[in-house]
Amino acid sequence: MSTASPAHAFARSDRTQIGVWWWTVDRWMLGVVAILIVIGVAMSFSSSPAAAVRMNIGDPFHFAVRQSVFSIGAAVILIGMSMLEVRTIRRAAFFIWLAAVAIMILLPFLGHSAKGATRWVEFGGFSLQPSEFMKPALIVLVAWMFAEGQKGEGVPGVSIAFLLYLLSIGLLLIQPDVGQTVLITVAFFAAFWMAGVPISWVLMLGLTAFGGLISTYFVFPHVASRVDRFLSPDKADTHQVDRAAEAISAGGVFGRGPGEGVMKRHVPDLHTDFIYSVGAEEYGLIFSLLLITLFAFVVVRGLYRAMKLNDSFEQVAAAGLFVLVGQQAIINVAVNLNMIPTKGMTLPFISYGGSSMLAMGLTLGMALGLIRRRPGAYTPQEGLARAGAYT
Image (cartoon, rainbow, N blue to C red; front, top):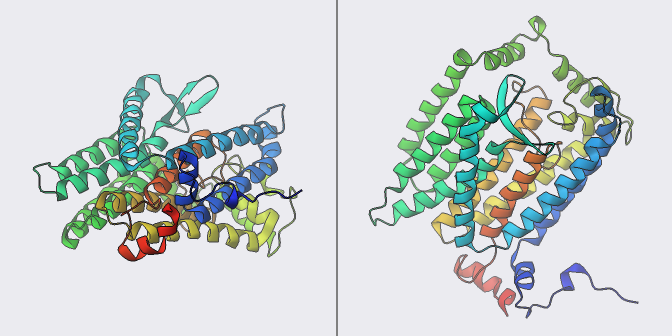
Protein backbone atom coordinates (compact mmCIF):
# COMPACT_ATOMS: atom_id res chain seq x y z
CA MET A 1 0.00 0.00 0.00
CA SER A 2 1.50 3.32 -1.06
CA THR A 3 1.38 6.41 1.11
CA ALA A 4 1.49 10.00 -0.03
CA SER A 5 4.34 12.17 1.23
CA PRO A 6 3.49 15.45 3.02
CA ALA A 7 4.60 17.41 -0.04
CA HIS A 8 1.93 15.62 -2.09
CA ALA A 9 -0.82 15.82 0.53
CA PHE A 10 -2.27 18.83 -1.29
CA ALA A 11 -2.53 19.43 -5.01
CA ARG A 12 -1.16 22.73 -6.29
CA SER A 13 -4.67 23.52 -7.48
CA ASP A 14 -6.03 23.11 -3.94
CA ARG A 15 -7.54 26.49 -3.03
CA THR A 16 -8.53 25.64 0.54
CA GLN A 17 -6.88 27.73 3.24
CA ILE A 18 -4.57 24.96 4.35
CA GLY A 19 -3.77 23.99 0.76
CA VAL A 20 -2.81 27.54 -0.19
CA TRP A 21 -0.80 27.83 3.03
CA TRP A 22 1.13 24.63 2.34
CA TRP A 23 2.25 25.75 -1.12
CA THR A 24 3.12 29.31 -0.10
CA VAL A 25 4.82 28.88 3.27
CA ASP A 26 8.59 28.37 3.50
CA ARG A 27 8.55 24.61 4.04
CA TRP A 28 12.33 24.38 4.52
CA MET A 29 12.17 26.79 7.42
CA LEU A 30 9.08 25.07 8.77
CA GLY A 31 10.99 21.77 8.76
CA VAL A 32 14.01 23.22 10.56
CA VAL A 33 11.78 24.78 13.23
CA ALA A 34 10.08 21.40 13.68
CA ILE A 35 13.52 19.83 14.21
CA LEU A 36 14.37 22.47 16.84
CA ILE A 37 11.10 21.77 18.68
CA VAL A 38 11.77 18.02 18.68
CA ILE A 39 15.32 18.61 19.98
CA GLY A 40 13.90 20.83 22.72
CA VAL A 41 11.49 18.11 23.86
CA ALA A 42 14.24 15.48 23.77
CA MET A 43 16.56 17.70 25.80
CA SER A 44 13.76 18.30 28.30
CA PHE A 45 13.35 14.55 28.86
CA SER A 46 17.11 14.39 29.47
CA SER A 47 17.25 17.26 31.97
CA SER A 48 13.85 16.87 33.68
CA PRO A 49 14.77 14.10 36.18
CA ALA A 50 17.71 16.06 37.61
CA ALA A 51 15.64 19.25 37.81
CA ALA A 52 12.77 17.42 39.51
CA VAL A 53 15.12 15.98 42.16
CA ARG A 54 16.60 19.41 42.93
CA MET A 55 13.12 20.92 43.32
CA ASN A 56 11.70 17.98 45.30
CA ILE A 57 9.11 17.14 42.63
CA GLY A 58 7.95 13.52 42.73
CA ASP A 59 7.42 13.04 39.00
CA PRO A 60 10.85 12.86 37.31
CA PHE A 61 9.34 13.86 33.97
CA HIS A 62 7.32 16.76 35.32
CA PHE A 63 9.18 19.33 33.20
CA ALA A 64 9.40 17.08 30.15
CA VAL A 65 5.65 16.50 30.02
CA ARG A 66 4.93 20.20 30.44
CA GLN A 67 7.49 21.07 27.77
CA SER A 68 5.81 18.62 25.41
CA VAL A 69 2.47 20.34 25.96
CA PHE A 70 4.08 23.77 25.47
CA SER A 71 5.69 22.52 22.26
CA ILE A 72 2.35 21.40 20.85
CA GLY A 73 0.89 24.78 21.77
CA ALA A 74 3.80 26.59 20.11
CA ALA A 75 3.39 24.53 16.93
CA VAL A 76 -0.33 25.31 16.81
CA ILE A 77 0.31 29.03 17.31
CA LEU A 78 3.10 29.04 14.72
CA ILE A 79 0.99 27.32 12.05
CA GLY A 80 -2.10 29.39 12.89
CA MET A 81 -0.25 32.71 12.71
CA SER A 82 1.57 31.76 9.50
CA MET A 83 -1.81 31.14 7.82
CA LEU A 84 -2.99 34.70 8.45
CA GLU A 85 -3.00 37.45 5.87
CA VAL A 86 -0.64 40.40 6.40
CA ARG A 87 -3.45 42.74 7.47
CA THR A 88 -4.63 40.23 10.07
CA ILE A 89 -1.09 39.79 11.42
CA ARG A 90 -0.87 43.56 11.94
CA ARG A 91 -4.17 43.62 13.79
CA ALA A 92 -3.23 40.60 15.89
CA ALA A 93 0.07 42.28 16.83
CA PHE A 94 -1.78 45.38 18.01
CA PHE A 95 -4.13 43.47 20.31
CA ILE A 96 -1.37 41.18 21.61
CA TRP A 97 0.83 44.19 22.41
CA LEU A 98 -2.09 45.95 24.09
CA ALA A 99 -2.93 42.92 26.25
CA ALA A 100 0.72 42.28 27.16
CA VAL A 101 1.31 45.92 28.14
CA ALA A 102 -1.87 45.97 30.23
CA ILE A 103 -0.67 42.91 32.17
CA MET A 104 2.82 44.41 32.55
CA ILE A 105 1.30 47.57 34.05
CA LEU A 106 -0.47 45.39 36.64
CA LEU A 107 2.59 43.28 37.47
CA PRO A 108 3.77 45.45 40.42
CA PHE A 109 0.40 44.75 42.06
CA LEU A 110 -0.49 41.23 40.89
CA GLY A 111 2.78 39.77 39.68
CA HIS A 112 4.84 36.91 41.06
CA SER A 113 8.37 37.81 42.18
CA ALA A 114 11.35 35.52 41.64
CA LYS A 115 15.10 36.16 41.75
CA GLY A 116 14.56 39.82 42.58
CA ALA A 117 12.26 40.56 39.61
CA THR A 118 8.50 40.75 39.09
CA ARG A 119 7.97 39.48 35.56
CA TRP A 120 5.31 36.79 35.85
CA VAL A 121 1.62 36.50 36.57
CA GLU A 122 0.38 33.15 37.86
CA PHE A 123 -2.92 31.44 37.12
CA GLY A 124 -4.00 27.80 37.09
CA GLY A 125 -0.50 26.56 37.97
CA PHE A 126 1.02 28.33 34.97
CA SER A 127 3.34 31.35 35.11
CA LEU A 128 2.90 33.77 32.21
CA GLN A 129 5.62 36.27 31.30
CA PRO A 130 3.79 38.93 29.25
CA SER A 131 6.99 40.59 28.02
CA GLU A 132 7.75 37.48 25.93
CA PHE A 133 4.61 38.11 23.87
CA MET A 134 5.04 41.87 23.83
CA LYS A 135 8.40 41.60 21.98
CA PRO A 136 7.26 40.25 18.59
CA ALA A 137 4.06 42.28 18.68
CA LEU A 138 6.05 45.48 19.26
CA ILE A 139 8.39 44.77 16.33
CA VAL A 140 5.43 44.31 13.98
CA LEU A 141 3.78 47.49 15.28
CA VAL A 142 6.85 49.71 14.92
CA ALA A 143 7.43 48.35 11.40
CA TRP A 144 3.82 49.26 10.63
CA MET A 145 4.33 52.78 11.96
CA PHE A 146 7.58 53.24 10.03
CA ALA A 147 5.80 52.16 6.84
CA GLU A 148 2.87 54.52 7.49
CA GLY A 149 5.27 57.39 8.12
CA GLN A 150 7.00 56.75 4.79
CA LYS A 151 3.73 57.22 2.89
CA GLY A 152 3.79 60.97 3.56
CA GLU A 153 0.09 61.11 4.42
CA GLY A 154 0.50 63.02 7.65
CA VAL A 155 0.81 60.00 9.97
CA PRO A 156 3.64 60.63 12.50
CA GLY A 157 4.75 57.03 12.19
CA VAL A 158 8.29 57.44 13.52
CA SER A 159 7.08 59.38 16.57
CA ILE A 160 4.42 56.77 17.36
CA ALA A 161 6.98 53.96 16.92
CA PHE A 162 9.33 55.62 19.42
CA LEU A 163 6.50 56.13 21.91
CA LEU A 164 5.57 52.43 21.66
CA TYR A 165 9.22 51.48 22.14
CA LEU A 166 9.80 53.81 25.10
CA LEU A 167 6.62 52.65 26.86
CA SER A 168 7.59 49.01 26.35
CA ILE A 169 11.16 49.29 27.65
CA GLY A 170 9.99 51.53 30.49
CA LEU A 171 7.71 48.74 31.72
CA LEU A 172 10.54 46.22 31.29
CA LEU A 173 12.96 48.27 33.37
CA ILE A 174 10.39 48.58 36.16
CA GLN A 175 10.35 44.78 36.57
CA PRO A 176 13.47 44.99 36.08
CA ASP A 177 14.40 43.02 32.94
CA VAL A 178 17.51 44.43 31.31
CA GLY A 179 18.04 41.38 29.07
CA GLN A 180 14.68 41.75 27.33
CA THR A 181 15.28 45.49 27.06
CA VAL A 182 18.52 44.84 25.18
CA LEU A 183 16.77 42.36 22.86
CA ILE A 184 13.99 44.78 22.00
CA THR A 185 16.36 47.73 21.61
CA VAL A 186 18.60 45.94 19.11
CA ALA A 187 15.62 44.65 17.11
CA PHE A 188 14.00 48.10 17.20
CA PHE A 189 17.10 49.84 15.87
CA ALA A 190 17.51 47.15 13.23
CA ALA A 191 13.96 47.87 12.08
CA PHE A 192 14.68 51.61 12.29
CA TRP A 193 17.71 51.22 10.04
CA MET A 194 15.96 48.91 7.56
CA ALA A 195 13.11 51.40 7.28
CA GLY A 196 15.53 53.72 5.46
CA VAL A 197 16.36 56.16 8.25
CA PRO A 198 19.66 58.06 7.69
CA ILE A 199 22.63 56.22 9.16
CA SER A 200 23.56 59.30 11.20
CA TRP A 201 20.28 58.96 13.11
CA VAL A 202 20.91 55.29 13.73
CA LEU A 203 24.45 55.98 15.01
CA MET A 204 23.27 58.80 17.27
CA LEU A 205 20.47 56.73 18.75
CA GLY A 206 22.77 53.72 19.01
CA LEU A 207 25.23 55.74 21.09
CA THR A 208 22.35 56.91 23.28
CA ALA A 209 21.19 53.32 23.78
CA PHE A 210 24.76 52.23 24.59
CA GLY A 211 24.98 54.97 27.21
CA GLY A 212 21.69 53.75 28.65
CA LEU A 213 23.03 50.20 28.80
CA ILE A 214 26.13 51.37 30.67
CA SER A 215 23.94 53.25 33.14
CA THR A 216 22.12 50.02 34.09
CA TYR A 217 25.34 48.93 35.82
CA PHE A 218 24.94 51.81 38.29
CA VAL A 219 21.14 51.69 38.57
CA PHE A 220 20.41 47.97 38.96
CA PRO A 221 22.40 46.03 41.59
CA HIS A 222 21.76 42.65 39.92
CA VAL A 223 23.28 43.94 36.68
CA ALA A 224 26.36 45.20 38.53
CA SER A 225 26.65 41.84 40.30
CA ARG A 226 26.55 39.88 37.04
CA VAL A 227 29.07 42.14 35.36
CA ASP A 228 31.40 41.98 38.38
CA ARG A 229 31.19 38.18 38.42
CA PHE A 230 32.04 38.11 34.73
CA LEU A 231 34.98 40.52 35.01
CA SER A 232 36.31 39.14 38.32
CA PRO A 233 35.32 35.46 38.51
CA ASP A 234 37.90 34.81 41.24
CA LYS A 235 36.10 37.21 43.58
CA ALA A 236 32.49 36.05 43.11
CA ASP A 237 30.25 33.01 43.03
CA THR A 238 30.34 31.67 39.45
CA HIS A 239 28.97 28.21 40.24
CA GLN A 240 26.50 27.96 37.35
CA VAL A 241 28.85 29.32 34.71
CA ASP A 242 31.71 27.10 35.93
CA ARG A 243 29.55 23.96 35.89
CA ALA A 244 28.26 24.85 32.42
CA ALA A 245 31.83 25.24 31.18
CA GLU A 246 32.76 21.88 32.72
CA ALA A 247 29.76 20.25 31.05
CA ILE A 248 30.72 21.60 27.62
CA SER A 249 34.35 20.51 28.11
CA ALA A 250 33.36 17.05 29.34
CA GLY A 251 31.23 16.45 26.25
CA GLY A 252 34.21 16.46 23.90
CA VAL A 253 33.46 15.84 20.24
CA PHE A 254 30.81 13.12 20.52
CA GLY A 255 29.47 13.58 24.07
CA ARG A 256 28.94 11.25 27.00
CA GLY A 257 25.75 9.83 25.48
CA PRO A 258 21.99 10.47 25.84
CA GLY A 259 21.03 10.96 29.48
CA GLU A 260 24.60 10.41 30.67
CA GLY A 261 25.41 14.01 31.58
CA VAL A 262 26.35 14.61 35.22
CA MET A 263 26.69 18.40 35.51
CA LYS A 264 22.92 18.92 35.15
CA ARG A 265 22.55 17.41 38.63
CA HIS A 266 24.38 20.33 40.23
CA VAL A 267 23.12 23.48 38.50
CA PRO A 268 19.59 24.83 39.17
CA ASP A 269 19.13 26.40 35.72
CA LEU A 270 20.60 23.73 33.45
CA HIS A 271 17.11 22.78 32.18
CA THR A 272 16.35 26.41 31.29
CA ASP A 273 19.05 29.03 30.65
CA PHE A 274 21.92 26.51 30.47
CA ILE A 275 20.25 23.75 28.45
CA TYR A 276 22.87 24.27 25.72
CA SER A 277 25.49 22.96 28.16
CA VAL A 278 23.43 19.84 28.82
CA GLY A 279 23.29 19.15 25.10
CA ALA A 280 27.01 19.81 24.68
CA GLU A 281 27.89 17.38 27.49
CA GLU A 282 25.64 14.55 26.31
CA TYR A 283 25.97 14.93 22.54
CA GLY A 284 29.28 16.74 22.12
CA LEU A 285 30.71 19.40 19.86
CA ILE A 286 29.07 18.02 16.71
CA PHE A 287 25.62 18.43 18.24
CA SER A 288 26.48 21.94 19.45
CA LEU A 289 27.57 23.01 15.98
CA LEU A 290 24.48 21.40 14.44
CA LEU A 291 22.24 23.33 16.82
CA ILE A 292 23.96 26.62 15.97
CA THR A 293 23.69 25.78 12.26
CA LEU A 294 19.94 25.21 12.56
CA PHE A 295 19.44 28.61 14.18
CA ALA A 296 21.70 30.23 11.61
CA PHE A 297 19.68 28.66 8.80
CA VAL A 298 16.41 30.06 10.17
CA VAL A 299 17.79 33.56 10.70
CA VAL A 300 19.86 33.88 7.51
CA ARG A 301 17.19 32.38 5.28
CA GLY A 302 14.55 34.51 6.98
CA LEU A 303 16.52 37.72 6.49
CA TYR A 304 17.24 36.79 2.87
CA ARG A 305 13.55 36.23 2.16
CA ALA A 306 12.56 39.37 4.04
CA MET A 307 14.94 41.56 2.06
CA LYS A 308 13.34 40.39 -1.20
CA LEU A 309 9.84 41.49 -0.17
CA ASN A 310 8.45 44.48 -2.07
CA ASP A 311 6.31 45.96 0.71
CA SER A 312 8.32 48.02 3.20
CA PHE A 313 6.18 47.00 6.18
CA GLU A 314 6.47 43.29 5.42
CA GLN A 315 10.20 43.63 4.82
CA VAL A 316 10.98 45.51 8.04
CA ALA A 317 8.61 43.50 10.25
CA ALA A 318 9.82 40.10 9.03
CA ALA A 319 13.49 41.08 9.26
CA GLY A 320 12.98 42.50 12.76
CA LEU A 321 11.35 39.27 13.93
CA PHE A 322 14.21 37.14 12.59
CA VAL A 323 16.73 39.49 14.23
CA LEU A 324 14.85 38.96 17.51
CA VAL A 325 15.19 35.17 17.23
CA GLY A 326 18.85 35.36 16.21
CA GLN A 327 19.76 37.69 19.05
CA GLN A 328 18.19 35.47 21.67
CA ALA A 329 20.00 32.38 20.40
CA ILE A 330 23.34 34.21 20.22
CA ILE A 331 23.00 35.63 23.73
CA ASN A 332 22.09 32.27 25.25
CA VAL A 333 24.97 30.42 23.59
CA ALA A 334 27.40 33.24 24.45
CA VAL A 335 26.39 33.05 28.12
CA ASN A 336 26.87 29.27 28.13
CA LEU A 337 30.33 29.75 26.64
CA ASN A 338 31.10 32.43 29.27
CA MET A 339 31.65 35.07 26.59
CA ILE A 340 29.26 37.60 28.15
CA PRO A 341 27.70 38.11 31.61
CA THR A 342 24.71 35.92 32.45
CA LYS A 343 21.41 37.28 31.12
CA GLY A 344 18.70 34.81 32.11
CA MET A 345 17.85 34.34 28.42
CA THR A 346 16.28 31.11 27.13
CA LEU A 347 17.44 29.27 24.01
CA PRO A 348 14.52 29.45 21.55
CA PHE A 349 12.49 26.20 21.37
CA ILE A 350 15.16 24.36 23.40
CA SER A 351 15.05 25.73 26.95
CA TYR A 352 12.23 24.75 29.27
CA GLY A 353 9.58 27.43 29.70
CA GLY A 354 5.97 27.87 28.65
CA SER A 355 5.98 31.60 27.96
CA SER A 356 9.21 31.39 26.00
CA MET A 357 8.04 28.44 23.91
CA LEU A 358 4.61 29.86 23.09
CA ALA A 359 5.99 33.34 22.37
CA MET A 360 8.63 31.90 20.05
CA GLY A 361 5.86 30.10 18.18
CA LEU A 362 4.11 33.46 17.88
CA THR A 363 7.30 35.20 16.70
CA LEU A 364 8.17 32.75 13.95
CA GLY A 365 4.51 32.25 13.05
CA MET A 366 4.23 35.96 12.30
CA ALA A 367 7.54 35.92 10.43
CA LEU A 368 6.56 32.93 8.30
CA GLY A 369 3.21 34.56 7.58
CA LEU A 370 4.90 37.75 6.39
CA ILE A 371 7.38 36.00 4.06
CA ARG A 372 4.84 33.66 2.48
CA ARG A 373 4.74 33.72 -1.31
CA ARG A 374 1.86 35.89 -2.48
CA PRO A 375 1.16 37.49 -5.86
CA GLY A 376 3.23 40.68 -5.98
CA ALA A 377 4.93 40.06 -2.63
CA TYR A 378 8.39 39.56 -4.07
CA THR A 379 10.51 41.04 -6.83
CA PRO A 380 9.38 40.26 -10.41
CA GLN A 381 12.13 37.66 -10.77
CA GLU A 382 11.03 35.89 -7.61
CA GLY A 383 7.42 36.12 -8.66
CA LEU A 384 8.14 34.49 -12.03
CA ALA A 385 10.18 31.76 -10.40
CA ARG A 386 7.36 30.97 -8.00
CA ALA A 387 4.47 31.44 -10.42
CA GLY A 388 3.72 27.73 -10.31
CA ALA A 389 2.68 28.04 -6.68
CA TYR A 390 -0.51 29.81 -7.75
CA THR A 391 -1.52 27.61 -10.67
